Length: 494
Ligand code: NAP
Image 1 (cartoon, rainbow, N blue to C red):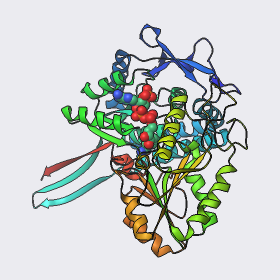
Image 2: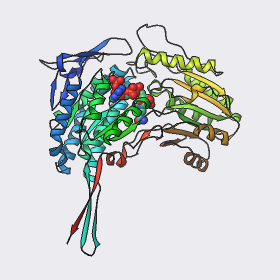
Image 3: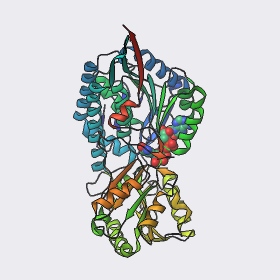
Image 4: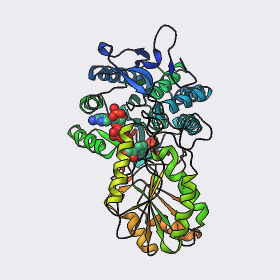
C-alpha cells in the first residue's frame, strides 16, 4: 500500500488493504461489505471507499482486543518497549507517506501534515520509553508483621475515539499511551479521516505488534460503535477526543456501568495582551496560535482581550499578517491555509461570523468563501472586533475555524476577568514584556495549558487536558500513561 502523488490510496497487491477494517491483526471487509466514501476536502475527489463497520464488527474488534489483553499486559516491559520502538521506527521510515495521507484526508498543507507526522513518530517513540518507567511502590514493614507493594496494572481494553483535525497525532496520544501501559485498543477514527488511522495500525503491526493489540474500526455509524463501547462489559475504558456534546453523552451513559471515561473536549481559548507586550511579535505568534490547521485546533486562540492603549497597534499588525496568509492548494509549499474539513464546517463558520456581526461585532479582515472551486471548502481567514462589555454572545462559543475575535478592554483586571468568563478551560495565552507578570497571569487563568508570549507546542513530556467543561483526565506526559493504569495494593503478611 502507498499513497499516490495526489494522496489517493493505492491498494496492496490482491486486496484493498488500505481501506479495510483492521481486526485481530488482519484486514477484512465490513459485514455485508458496507462502505463509505472518504473525500479530499480540497477537491471533493473520493480518495477511497472504506469498510464501514457495523455494531457486530465493532464487537468483533472488542473480542480481538479482549483476547489479546492477557498476553500483552503480561509481556515483559522490555519486550513491549522493543515492539513499540520498532513501531515508531517503522512510522519514521514512512513519515512522508503518512504526511501525504494526512494532507489528503484533512486538506491541511503538506508542510503542516509533515509536522504532524513527525510529531506522531516522536510521541510513539516517547511512549515506548515510558513502558520502562511504569510506576510502582514498595512499603516494607508497613506494620511489624506486614510488607506492602503497590503495582500499576493496565486498565484493560481501551476504546479510543478520535477526531479528524489531527488524524495521526490524536491516535499517537491515545494509542501510544494505552499500549505503553499494557492495554489493548479498539480505535474508532473520525469518519472523514480513517485512512491515516488504518495506515498507523498496519505499520505498527508489521513492525511486530501482536494480533489483536490494536484494532481499527472506521464507521459511518458512530452512535452504534459508541453503544458497543458503552455497553460491552469487556471494554474497560473509553478515551474520547471531540465535541462537548458527544463527550457528555458518553459520560452520562458510561455512568450505568461506572466505566472509566477520559474526555478531551472543546475549548474557547482566551488571550490576554498587555500594554508592555511586543506588539509585532504578539501579532505574528497569534497568527500561529489561531490559523494553524485553518483554525481547526482545540487549543487555538479564539478570543483576544487586549488593553486599549495597544489595541489599535495590535489590530493593525494582525490585519496585515492575516491578509498575508495564502489560502489554497494544500500541496503547494507556500500555502498557509488549506480548506476546512467539509462544506458543513464552512457553513458553521459563516453562520458564526454573521451572528457576531448581527450582535454588534465588526468584521475588520477577511471572511467569506473563496469562490473559485464550488466543491471545496476554503474560507478567508477573518478577524472580528468588539468592545469589552459589549461582546457578541457568539464569542462565548468555540469557533472551530480561521476566525479570531479581538475585544478591547480597559485594563489587565478586566482582560483577566473576561478571559476566565467561560465554561471551557483547555488553553489560554498571555502576552507581556514582564516575565513575573506573565507567570502571575498564567496562574490566574483557569486552563489546562497556558502559553506566555507564544503559541503552544505539543511535547510528549507535557501533560495536556482541560479544566471545567474542556474535559476529564490528561493525555501525554507521564500522566497520560497513568490514566490507563490502575493501582493495586498488595499486603504481604510475614
Ligand atoms: P465529534 O463530532 O464529537 O466527533 C469526534 C469523534 O466522536 C468522531 O470519531 C466521531 O465519529 C465520534 N462520534 C460522533 N458521535 C458519536 C457517538 N454518538 N458515540 C461515539 N462516538 C461518536 O467532534 P468533531 O466535530 O469531529 O471534532 C471537533 C471537536 O473536537 C472540537 O470541539 C474540538 O475542540 C475537539 N477537539 C478536542 C481536542 C482536545 O484534545 N481537547 C483535540 C481535538 C479536537 P464521526 O467522525 O463518525 O462523527
